[in-house]
Amino acid sequence: MLHIKKLTKRYPTGDLALNAVDMEIPKGQVVALIGPSGAGKSTLIRCVNRLVEPTSGEVILKDQNITSLGTRGLRTVRRKMGMIFQEYALVERLTVMENVLSGRLGYVGFWRSLFRKYPQADVDEAFRLLDRVGLLAMADKRADELSGGQRQRVGIARALIQDPDLLLVDEPTASLDPKTSRQIMRLICELCEERELAAIINIHDVALAQMFVQRVIGLKLGELQFDGAPDQLTPGVLTSIYGEEDWEATIETVDDDEVGE
Amino acid sequence: MTAITLDSKLGTAWKKPHSIKNPTLRWALVIGSIVYLILAVGSIDVNWNRVSEGLVRGWNFVVAFANPDFVSRGTDIREGLMESLIMTITSTVVGILISIPIGLGAARNISPLPVYIICRGIVALSRSLNEIIVAILMVAIFGFGPLAGFITLSFATIGFLAKLLAEEIEDMDKAQAEAIKATGSSWMQWINYGVQPQIMPRLVGLSMYRLDINFRESAVLGLVGAGGIGATLNTAFDRYEFDTAAAILLIIIVTVMFLEYLSGIIRKRVQ
Image 1 (cartoon, chains in turn brown, cyan):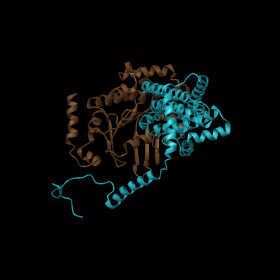
Image 2 (cartoon, chains in turn red, blue):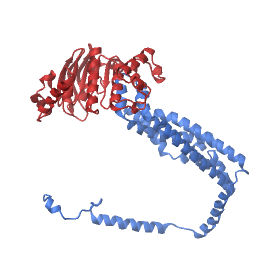
Image 3 (cartoon, rainbow over the protein chains, first blue to last red):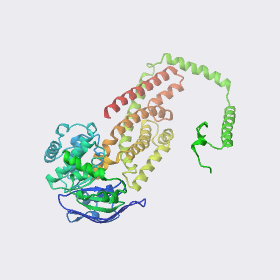
Image 4 (tube, one colour):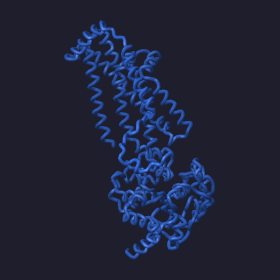
């Protein structure tokens, strides 16, 4: 469904963030993208919806080459890719409802969005999603009144109301406590399953990734280092991605957690 | 270069390093500044006879403050004040309306380079010309009266507001704007959802502040013939009617204080 071919990004500073990365993600598959800071994880998912312009290579979503689209075509294809951010990236001075409805901006005209007159179907869907993430009562609160976990739930609702084919998720749990992190990861993965969504999740927490996803891709200095099932992540593999460290504890934690739940 | 060891440091006193390391240069600068200051003060030519005359006049003015005369020139004051208020409000509104698009254009993070350069150019032009100079020019073009003042203040508002607005946009949280862009929004929608909520409180605050500045400026502009309460004040001084002048100054002070109070309330509301 998503096909990335020889994707390369060189920043104007000369840093090569991505070097000819290839990957293919079928419908409904949730992939965790791991790797040290600066490995190009954020750049990769931003190249998919072209918040960052790739230097060369192709990104193909459902037989459509995203890299060659003009402004209008890009807007249309961005509607089909929901994005969830580190630090939530909600517009803090807007209400929860406005934040969720902003996911429909690609579908409604300027005047409708300016006067917040969204089609009833969109409003209903927003209420449904808020109910699904457990925040129905918060609809008229301002986004900056919510806690971190609640904000990320709003972020998830905003991405899903786009009716996407693909979720791009950038460090969704980086600023959350361990319990909330798991709840958020579980919610994202459940929703992907319900809606048969493919997702790329950038994540630092290897143990958390192993707990929830079907496939893990390791990136190091802009190059693919590992691609396989979560249980294939051995200390040797982690060393090849992150460098020398004692990995036994990281992997064992996962086993303990799974027994614990 | 000898290596710094802990033993060589222990027991020695520590002093903050001088910001000018060379001691000769440092003392030369200190002594040079003092000598210059003495010479500069010595060069001011004071005509003490003139000062003693002026002190009497100044004292009359201070005395006039004790019993300001609002009545004998009441009509002139009222007309001048109304003219000033109209000038202030219209120029602030027009100035804000023009400075919003220019402010958007002058923010490097959301505008392409050619637009940025043009908008920054407008801002720089507006800021480099002092209000008084613009007013003199406008009076020369449009003649005496509040129209010249209105145009001057609108022009000055653009430079002030567009610059500060652009800086606020440049300092905004990128992530919020990026999230809106990622939904497939158009440029206008992106500004409305991703940028506007972030800068709105600042825009309201700056507009109120500018209203306050424009009122004070409108009093000054009268002195060069651009209408308003300043013209009335100027006339009062020319006629040595210090009691009327005092009344006008008191009105200006009270109005500015009122605007300050009002802007405080409004800014608290929009946070």
